Length: 210
Length: 184
Image (cartoon, rainbow over all chains, first blue to last red; front, side):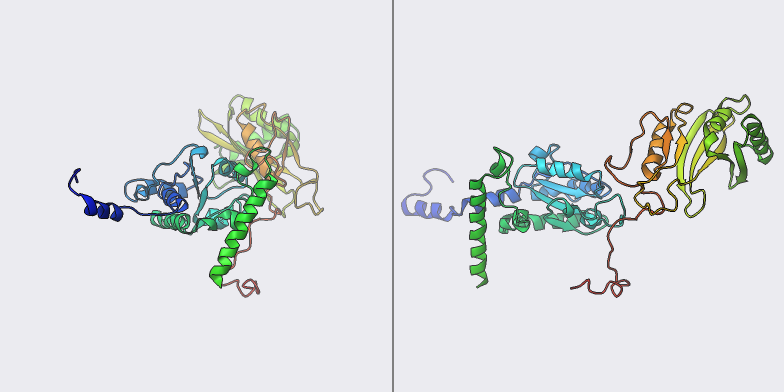
């Protein structure tokens, strides 16, 4: 449309039709969910399926998540693709801790979800023993479609109900990086702020329940 | 590999040089085996490496083994190779368990000890570390005897037969009755 095509009332109507209003949080979460940056991090054979998920046949780029970052500082999704041995667990945990918030974790396959077939002395029986996990994808290994489905579930979580994140499930409000930036432990103000947020959310939930 | 007669000759010659070093010979499953006294392992290995006409100069692998409840319980296997004749010989050193009879499932008691063969075969260094890691067999004179695959703060010797297998019990349809109450 060129300048001058519409005038007066018609122009006003045209502009009104093309504006949507929303809250900043909604827009932010919508943007986050559609540009998740996974970390380039493979643990075992599931990583092969994860790689094919990026390639053209399955193509995670359809969901805006094709940019695997080699640094945890630039990633916000960790896909645990394989069994986590007890020697690897501290490394995984350190990578997770190095990721910036907000961050999400997909536990891909039976091994990282429950130890899988490796019920023995060397493998952690489920990665959620030492770190928060948002989505568990079953399978040995899961097909790339299954991982994509789990990824879609995660996107839906990010868009629809971001507060169902691990901080609430693990009662870890106040441990955000910004809250303990100065001293390494949460400041009283940060803790109080976090508690206020939690209380407000609980109240909303209660009212919704009633 | 040496044939059965050749193996007996080798055993005889080693015993002539080192009294009581070779206890048994075995020639089955396609391998010639010398069962030796654990205290004489270095003498036997050096003899096999240096004696003209033998010259098993390459140590292709070192294994640990746990034969519980047999006695002696542990064994260290050396697989030697002569690369000119492409002949292999298998040397097996049997080791008793110094903490036998005690309830020592975490392997905190005294450990079986053997002299390290790293001075003869440098390639044995990592393999002896691995045996130490999994079976708790100490190699005297090893330059750097640390755990190699398990974390350094790991407790216990996981490939021993009396080591708790670990993991978690899993409910299957055939075990759900034995584990009554799991659904509560």
